[in-house]
Image (cartoon, rainbow, N blue to C red; front, side):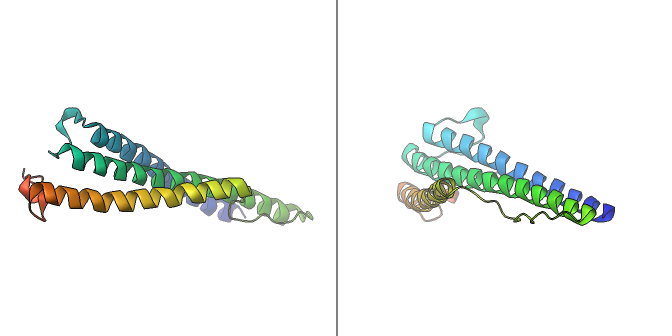
Length: 156
């Protein structure tokens, strides 16, 4: 059982690291979305983009930030539930207690589950729709389909 607990702990640490990556990505996409929507270019990191196209792309990226934030929230709840279920399983195995096993997936309240699903669906719709509209707008403003070439985004 000690070996199983060691392997589980390594898995939980790896899963927690993945959750941190999701959370930091959500924060980074949120900051990028605010910068794009607000027309800010801190330290010249964002390439040239017309304001209206940048606004639409910023709204799209804010939707992506919500998707990553919701995924991070769900992964954290999933990790918490897996740890609780693992501890319960170890208690049952070690002491032969008559405890029922816990489910491995998170058990949200119905209102929380509906809210999380609604936020994720709206974030996905906002991301997809505004991303397509932003790309079409940027193509029309540049006059070419490869607008990134027109504005030399990837030239050193």
